[in-house]
Image 1: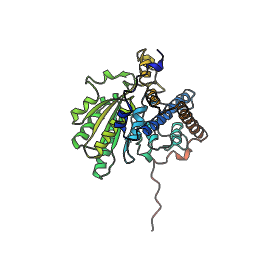
Image 2: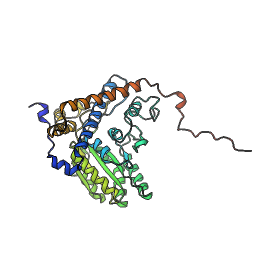
Image 3: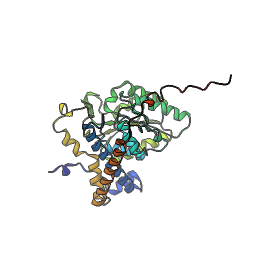
Image 4: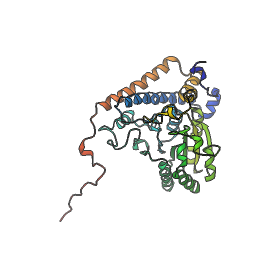
Length: 348
């Protein structure tokens, strides 16, 4: 049996998908697949550039595409996204320009942060995507604080915060979920459980039956979902966002995914992962799973699939070309946004 035959199929009939996604389900799945292709092309290209020394650091999201694309498509413009590490595709789906993101990866003169944030740590205020930090779990407290503010202002937005399985061991996880539960805030917690906190396996993070089960201790509903199943993730996110938007409080979704690449360009997973991990992960490849389902449903002829892949690769190539032809930030930018501008002297 070849690798393609080993891919776990999506367990749906067309009417099941329509029930989950609504009457526009076919267009939604095609849009999702197109974004997944872009994410996969971006990861492949940037990992290659990092190995060549043309990009300083990269943390791929390969294997997380179903979660990230579903979040981008299911969330509303007024919602705010607080990323963990691998959610950059959420910003792109919500409208952040690919070229701007690639300028950030190259830390050039058109990087919105002017090289102050390490690659894969973008800021995208244009789409309510909050600048992330590598400090584990801090975004959870930030999201809860913003959700409190949204409700105080009677703003219809919801805070959507992502974190990994390892972050559930951080103090901010407890503080954030406890505060959100007590005040019934409009926030959706998404644990992207890729089963490895760098080198620590998920079973070393908790003795609970799941990470989703932890939510109940804070008075918050928690659900566990197959994060490599696009339909399941989209349905759960849409339901949780709708619940929060109606004023019915927070919820937590644990999305079980398979990390298909090293933790980052600084990692060597062969030192700690079992030898068969790659085979198991490929069997749950979210892109392959969705590809097979929409192909079997007659939505994705070979010529369209090929065009989507070529378009994705062309977009990434164009963005890289633009970034590599852009000079680095000028020395005069070193103190921009650091010191207040001197005030003009007032009238005598």
